[in-house]
Length: 308
Image 1: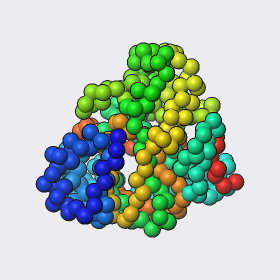
Image 2 (image 1 turned 45 degrees about the vertical axis):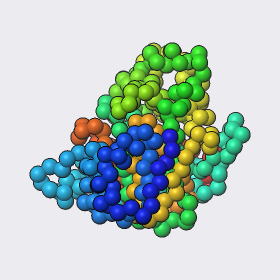
Image 3 (image 1 turned 90 degrees about the vertical axis):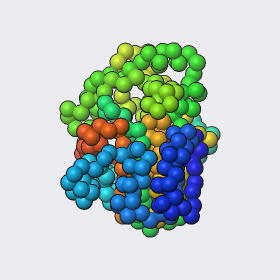
Image 4 (image 1 turned 60 degrees about the horizontal axis):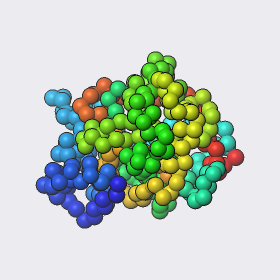
C-alpha cells in the first residue's frame, strides 16, 4: 500500500483518467488529491466516474444528498467530542498532538482522535471504499491526519500457527456491543477475500484493554481472543506499518476501505475539520445508512496520554 499523491490536477483531469485512477486505487489503496476544493456535485461526480458510489435517483442531487443515503455532509466529529467530554480520563478535553508510546511498543505512534478501525465491519455488505472531501480545515498543521494500515499485509504477518485456524474462523452472529440493541454482527469470515482482487485480508480491529467492547466474538474458539486482538492492536499501532495523510483545505482522499484500517490523528478542536464523505457498500443502499453508537463514555485505550 502506498498513498498516491496528486497535486495541480483539475476536476476534468480526474474525469478523463477515471479508468486509470480506479485501477490505481485498488492497486495501491489510497488516492490523495491536493487542494481540489470541490463542489458537492463534482465530488459526487468523481465517485460515480470511478464506480464507487450509488446512482442518484430521479428526485435529483439536492434531495438525495440531504437524505444522507448517498453523501454525508459537514461531518465534524461532534459525537466524538461529546463522548470525550463525558468520558473517563479525558477531563472534558480532546487529546493533543503528542505521540504516544503504547505498552510493549518500542516506537511511539501518533495520538489518535479516532482509534484504528475497519468502518462498518458488522454489516452484511462490507464497506468497499470511502471518499472524503475536506472542504474546511482550520486546525494546526499536521493535526487531524488520516492514517492507514494495510490489513492484507497484516494477514501475511500473522503467526504461522494461527493462519489455518483463522482461515476457517467466522465472527459470531450476536449483538454488536457498541451499537443499539438489535444491531447484529454479520457472520463474516475473519480472513476475507478482497471483493475486487481476491487476495486475503485480515478483517479485524484490535484492543489492548479487556473491556466489554471487544471487536467481535469468534463463532467457535480457534485462538485465544485476547491474544489475537492484542496482536492486531500491536500491529496497527506500530508506526512502521502506518502511512498518514496530513490534510489541507480542499483535499480529496479516496481509499480502499475493505483492505485498510484507518485512524484520525488528534490535535484539533470541534469544527476545525469539516468534511463531506461518500461511503460505498457495492450498491447496497441499506448499508450506507449508519446508526449512532450507544450513548456511552469514551473508552480510553491503555497507554493513551489523554488529559485528566
